[in-house]
Image 1 (cartoon, rainbow, N blue to C red):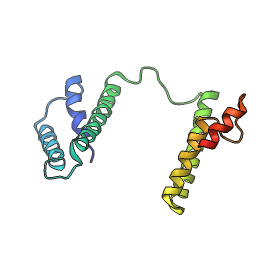
Image 2 (image 1 turned 30 degrees about the horizontal axis):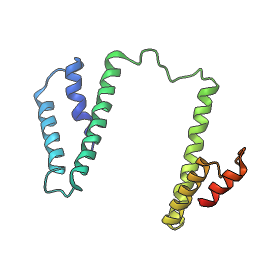
Image 3 (image 1 turned 180 degrees about the horizontal axis):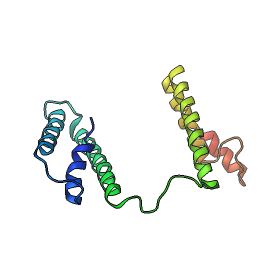
Image 4 (image 1 turned 90 degrees about the vertical axis):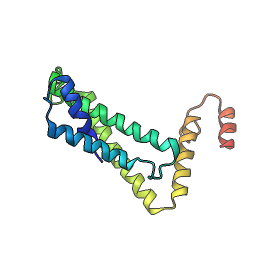
Length: 152
C-alpha cells in the first residue's frame, strides 16, 4: 500500500507547488479512510506495538513525499550524481555491487539449508569477530583472547 501520494499532496499545497482541487482532496480522504480500515480494531494487529509500526511506516511515507516536493521546489542545490567520479565514488559502487553478490549468496544459503543453522552460524561469526576470535585475528594478549574464544 502506498501512502506517499497521500502525504505528497498536502505537502505540495503547503509548499505552494500545487493548488487545492476537490477531486484530489476527495482522493486523499478516501485513501486515508482506506488506511484506517486496514488498521482498524477488527484487524488483528499484535497489540499497541503493531499500531506503532504502522505509524512508523506512515512517517517514512510522509518524509518521502516531502522529499519529492522539496526537490521539485528548491532543486538539488548543486548535487549532481553524474560523472566526473573519483576514487571514493568507484569504491562505493564496487562496495554496493559486492554487497549485492554477498547478500544474494546468503539468501541462497538460507534457502538451501536449515534456517536455524545458518542464523546461528552467522550470529556466531559476528560475535567471534567482535571479540577478535577470528582465525586471522592479531591480538597482543593471546592467552586472554584464547580464553575468551573458548567461552564462545
